[in-house]
Length: 396
Ligand code: CS2
Ligand code: MG
Image 1: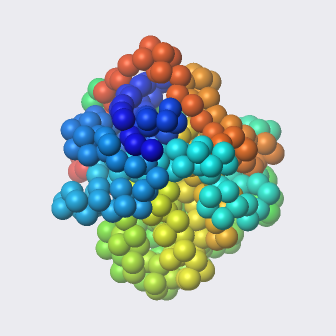
Image 2: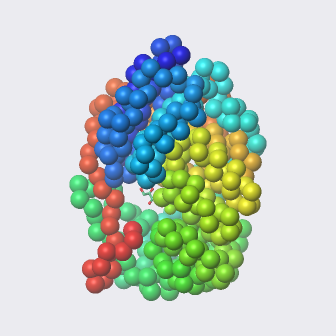
Image 3: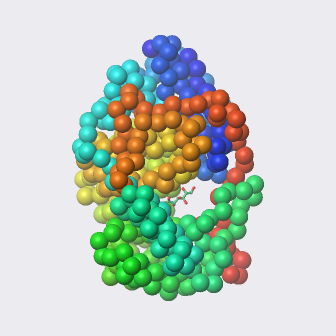
């Protein structure tokens, strides 16, 4: 079998997605997700100019060799753009291999280790009434684990609370760490009083705290028994998590911006986190994600694949196949997608009673409606930036 074509499809059914469609001489095609929110054209260009020419004529079954050739052959390693491009190829080749085998992808990854995949959804509110309504809506949708994000008194635009969609220039959101640290424990106290002690609650600090501030927040949240506190501090300096870990038993999740296992080396070997958060799309694909989860499993760390709306349904499909198969599954983020997005990417995975299942269709179990995709062309859109009251740029 040979690869005879590979097309990069940019589409924007409400938000931008980058898709790689790989075609073989035997008529089997594979789909890969290369979506990198706010940098889509960079990945599309990397694929079109530097990857697709190298794929033509190669054997799609040689997934590991292709991955290693693209990773090591680039010489310039790692980084979100490179790894998203490699991920799209890897995901598409696994789609092809599983289709040829006539099996859903999870069967090639060792078969099912569970019957279904627990998901968590995003609840948010500028104030408690709005937040409570949001939690109730998710519970009504069947979610059995809920991420809670809240407005902060004195702040106008805060991450995760009615965030405006990306625009042609970054929206400026505002931030005040002291106000946030004072307010958040009160919010979780109120949520626990309203919804009880058992509902798994998650929170995303979104890279904004110093290690000592993260340690304080983790400790302050202990009475509310969170499922996890996510991205409590920027983790390029992995050793910074030693301070946090030493002060709090609140479970920690990190890694959605990480794109190789080296980003996790200290975090995993010193058990400084409890969940690894990378997306299949941003970590180089299915092949390296399996290796990451095996590495993490040696240190009792579980999966929590990144799954917001800016991961395309193709990336979500690949995630759910991995979730079903690996032993050290933790939880799957699932924001869902709009009806239009789901029409562009018809898929076999299902969400029922708070749980996902990849379905039994051969391959990933997903298609690309190219005509509908073409009807919604790419529109430049940036992620917001964050500024403190004095105008200083802060982590978003
Ligand atoms: C967030 C993401 O879902 C999460 O945990 O951190 O929604 C993140 O803000 C976006 O993926 C950025 O594009
Ligand atoms: Mg996050």
